[in-house]
Length: 70
Image (cartoon, rainbow, N blue to C red; front, side, top):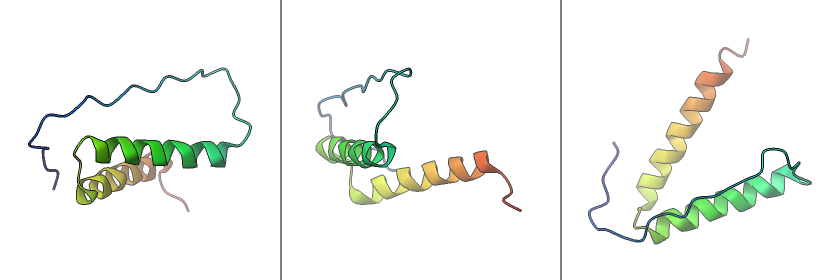
C-alpha cells in the first residue's frame, strides 16, 4: 500500500523535545504536533493517501500496544 515519493525534496526537520518538561496542555500540544507533521509531509511531497496510510499504520501500532480491551 505504501508508495515511494518519486522526487527529492528538502529533508524533514527533526523535532527535539525535552522529556523532563511537562506539557501544560497535552491535547493542544498533540494538535500542534499533528498539524506540523502533516504540513512537513505535504511540503516534502507526500500525497494525502500516503499520509492516511501512515496514520493507519500508527493507529495499528497503538492498537497492538494496547492489546485486548476486554
